[in-house]
Length: 148
Image 1 (cartoon, rainbow, N blue to C red):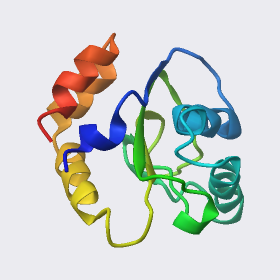
Image 2 (image 1 turned 30 degrees about the vertical axis):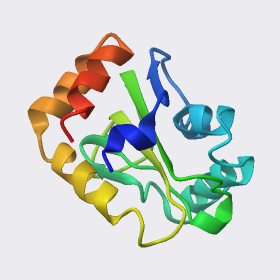
Image 3 (image 1 turned 90 degrees about the vertical axis):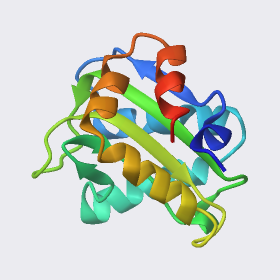
Image 4 (image 1 turned 60 degrees about the vertical axis):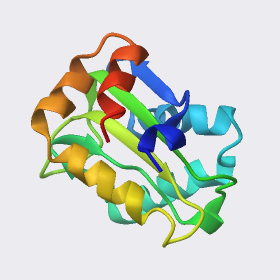
């Protein structure tokens, strides 16, 4: 299954500035909530885990993958892509501001292994990550993601 199957129309390009962690996390889950892919409890679980252990989901410079456990409110496997044009400080000491976020909503711990592999390939391609961050439209982002 291509990652685009899980993304669908769940793409947000945010130009907001000086976002709080909670406000940024709300944006990273906004389409998943709007389309009924996750319940509000899923977003709350991500926020709660952040309070407990910090920015566990910031994977590398520029890149985050917010997620919680399936039982925290996943209705359907899905991904949301969020580009923060002005970056957002998610309190990751090692990685700096985040510009590209992929929110993962998985139904169980096994079924999303292929998705994680495709995303990991994407995350390792600095040119594509930078191209996604530089994109001005959802269509530009989709063209890049369709390769994975």
